[in-house]
Image (tube, rainbow over all chains, first blue to last red; front, side):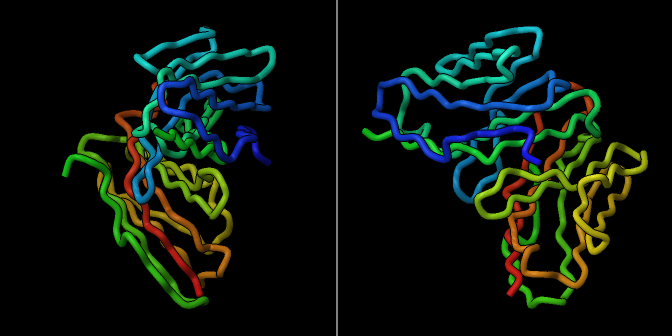
Length: 114
Length: 115
C-alpha cells in the first residue's frame, strides 16, 4: 500500500511564479520527510528535508511546510526557474524502518515554462 | 568517480534468464540500499545493507531476488528467472550511516527490460 501519496502527477508553472507540490502520508509513525528531485536518466538527488518537530524549513528558493495533523506536506519553489523542471519525489521515514529506508511517493513532474 | 556507480546502465533480457546488477557505493558509506521504480510508480524499497550486519530483505518481492554486499563495498542484485513484471529501473543508494539524516545518494540506475 502507498503510504506516501503525491496525487498530482504533473504541474505546469510559468517562470517566476510559485510552484507548490503537495504530498500526503498515512503512517503516523513517519517523523522525517524529504524531497528529492530527479532529472531524466539521472538518479534522484536530495533537495530539502524537515523533521516532524518543525512545521517549516527554508533553503533559498525552496521551502517545505509540514502539517502533522493533516498528514500533509508541501514544497514551495519561489521563484520558479526553467531549470527546476524535473520530477519531484516526496519521501518519509521513521525509526521503525530498516535503516531509515525511505518511503517514496510516485512523484510529480514539474514543468516551468519561460 | 565520486558518486554511486551502477552497471549496466541498460539491460535487455529474455523472460526466464538471470540478471545481475552491480552497485559501487560512495567510498566510506556504510549503508547501501536498493530500490526499484516501475513505470508510473514511486521508488520501491528492496533491500538494505549496513556494514557487516545482516541485511534487511523485507522489501524483496520474491525469492527470485537476492543481493549481496562484501563489507562496505560493491553490492550485486541478482534476479533469477526474470519475468516481465521485473522490468524497472533499479536504483542503488548509499549513505554515511543508517542515521537519521535521511539523505541518500543515488546512482543513475540500471534500466532492466524483460521481453
